[in-house]
Length: 399
Ligand SMILES: Nc1nc2c(c(=O)[nH]1)N[C@H]1C(S)=C(S)[C@@H](COP(=O)(O)O)O[C@H]1N2
Ligand SMILES: [Mo]
Image (cartoon, rainbow, N blue to C red; front, side, top):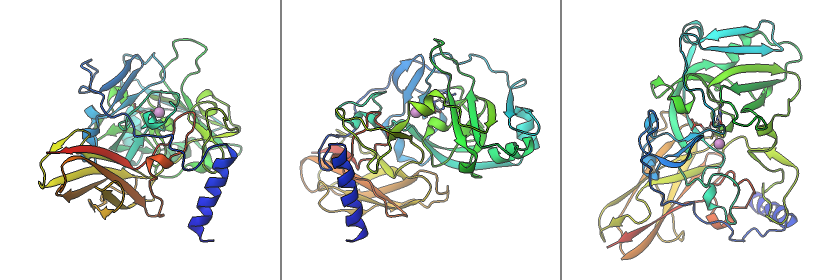
């Protein structure tokens, strides 16, 4: 059996084990027709708004023609309704405690002057991005494809901070705590944990986004940046880093942002799969920014399809575009990857529509490992609606 066939067979077998068929079309395209709201949020232009308390804002698809998402277009997700309304940059401290030789309280100014400053351009994507594609409905905010963005982050390596504190011998886990609070005491505060061995030099504590202070809603004054990983672990308004020997069993790691721990990471509503595992690194994905559903173009005119592609840092090798419902595919032109392997890779593809009426445009990204986006119909369901990466489709109208 060829490796590919073997993989297919294993996937089909594990799908069968949870009572679903690999070809069951239970997934559609993410909802795409939501309008921006006119509620004003600080430092943000009008965005698709799911809630104002906590703020839940989605970036419109049209933004994804560019490789950098501007700060005022960047999506926002908070779990807790209580976000501090005032932060004093002069007195803000981040505390490092637990199994360390020296407890540290580092001010913003010390972070900016006392440590090596590093930059990384990286995609921040919620694990629930595109969740609205899952049918039956998966629990959580019914995001379209705009719970993601790409920015240039500047800050200090987490490793440098931990080295200054000095890790004790039993140090194994790192917990990250944000300043936001729960409105009801039963709701646990937002905390993430990570194993020290997972830590690489690209993980930074960032204070800058695209050359400016972090916007308040994106975690001012400090946030964790974990390139290649879904953003539930990119803790905002980072106030405390605690080193421990054991995993502390905190809510978000234990309940939310998890998928079935089987080969297909899938299950059915009737047959939920246990155990589960946390979502960690991102799968390969692309989103078309132009044209959009319903865009009118003239027959035989010059149409330039633009979009972005990314993965977990292996890097994008190709983006293929189809204008005939997936029967044939042609390579899009990729922009140079000067921003590095964690960034959006912008692509463009020109064609002249030769038929009238509705035409579907599809984009499929392939990474350097050869992993590619599946057709939406082949995406398998999970109850949290995480990790959707179906081939992107927009339907235009040729007149
Ligand atoms: N302190 C804090 N950090 C947090 C969260 C939160 O609720 N509180 N949500 C996480 C999740 S699930 C996501 S998707 C990202 C969203 O980041 P953004 O608002 O900058 O887009 O922040 C992450 N960090
Ligand atoms: Mo998220």
